[in-house]
Length: 304
Image (tube, rainbow, N blue to C red):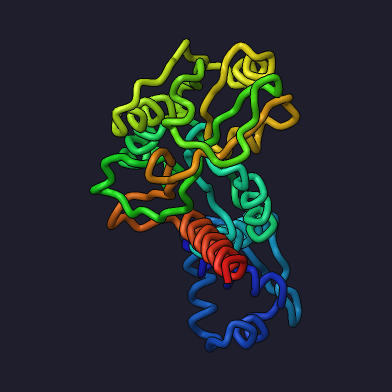
């Protein structure tokens, strides 16, 4: 038996007349009678019996009717769920994020969840190079990473270029201007080295590119401890903007490092090139694009 036969049987039981069931189903009466007979032969049981003008359902027929209703409902639910997954209303969003990626991400995910409340999530945090591998292996579909990296097999959407800041305790002299790496190379620097943050090498490379020799006294992988040490005047540090936004309330002086050509960290949104994204992932990309365009329009508005 198939779902079509079960639906025809449901109509026969509920209408109690072959002619009425045929009219409901928009088919002629003889094929419906033949279908009923074929079902009874296949099951080896009488499903309905004639009683006057109406059909009475046998015990075997009642059992089949119960399961027919369940299967019909499951079929409708399956069709609905497939359509919802296809439209991104349902499904799963597999997302990778670099440590201290966009601090606006929770707000964006909340807006996405309001639009698509049935979508479930798998969010992984890791360093950028490993996230690229996970996307390449299709473990996750999307990732927010720090650049530069080799991305020849990926589609890339640039989100923003993150500035860096020089931070000291409030006991230190405060600059009255933005600073350059040359201005701060002699300060005792304690650099962040959190796995996945991806800025330790970037800072060292920036000094090297400018032929500067910074006074590095150490590194610290625990960001809260790093901020505690800086505020206690143990040393100074260089940190990305997202770190300052996440760790507020410390007693420190903050100075923006002046030129993005000296040190900056581009942040990008990647997915596998020539890969058909799930609808949930595509909807998230579309929402991200709208946010980037909105932010760019406001930057231009502020400038002009």
